[in-house]
Image (tube, rainbow, N blue to C red; front, side):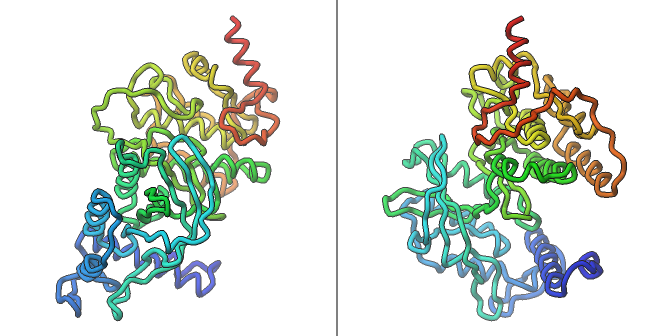
Amino acid sequence: MRFAKENTTLTPIETQYLINEIVKAREAVDARNKRGEESFCPICKLPKHSSRYCEHCMRVKLKKEVWTSGNPKIDAFLRKHQDESPVPYCIIEWIEFRDLKNVEFLAEGGYGKVYSATWTRGWIIDWDMKENNFIREPRNVALKIFNNNNFSKNEIFQEANWNQIFTRDRTVRNFVVLGLGFTKNEEGEYMIVFDFCEGGDLRAYLQKHYKNMSWKDKIGLAWNISVDLYRISETGSIHGDLHPGNILLLRNGGSWVISDLGTCESVDAQKEQMEVKGVPPYIAPELLEGYRKTKESDIYAFGIIMWEISAGCAPLGDRSIDRVRISLGLRPPIVPGTPKIYADLMQNCWAANPRDRISAKDAAKTLQVLMRNMMENNFVDEYPVEENQSCKSQESDSSTHRTSKVFRRQLNAVLDT
């Protein structure tokens, strides 16, 4: 609060907006934990812990709304999470498809398809105590439809449930893409509705902006992602398929979030190792040997992502040699000019032995210290590398499996011996 009031770089409007957001965040924490100053709602007469809203009145309002998805599992899922939500901007809903305008195809992957749209009714952003009703705001959204839409494998619930686990509080900056609810298109196919990330994915961002990025920018970007990964690991969870395609920018100038949560699982889950799936350059070597996913395998993927941020191009080559490359312990070459602390951290993340890898928490702390040093213009040692080891030409192809010619020559030399 003091920072907002004393920051002379902000306009009066920006200062007031920041103060309001801080108050909202604090009251959301109080409401969730039922702490802080208690008062009584003038409408329902029940105790509440926020001056902005009454969680009891909100739940009554939600229960009175008449809707159905046509699928009992979805109805039960939404009702359950609505009843557990303590704050207005934590609520997921059934979204009528007629309220989604300008639906356009965006992309297709192994899981299914993604579309963009405008939700005209809008998501819930607050509660009006005087009107005893929700305050809404129109929103650009993404619609995700799975290939197997018959719910036989529960993919849609797997992703939606993990999204709720990670975003139910929403009292601080989002670290995963925000789930808003479910809808069903005119063909009868169910979709998950997410907040639309206008900045695109990390791979596309680097292709567009890499040449203009300073090391301060690169380190700040890596730090943002490390914090996201730490927040996931802090819940006792594993992402399981981290790569630049599912790291998204909320909006230009905004923060980065992690998406595609259907691969997540608890660290305590005692699952047998399934078929290895994912983008080869980001798959940890132990997974190829039959071991299950861990927080350490997520850190390995983050290390490769750190390299891509430093180089501006995809790390490795075609699928046929990726498994050999990983088994041999080869890693992408350090880019000239890389700060030594950054390079050391990156190499620690992709260590062959999972036990030797740093935690997401400590990775975030290391990058934060390095970022502070860079911002204060302190001298930072560079990692000593040969000039010809770098990825010199930034490749424009968006394929995850392109690589530098230099590294391909290095790899072929090893394979030929």
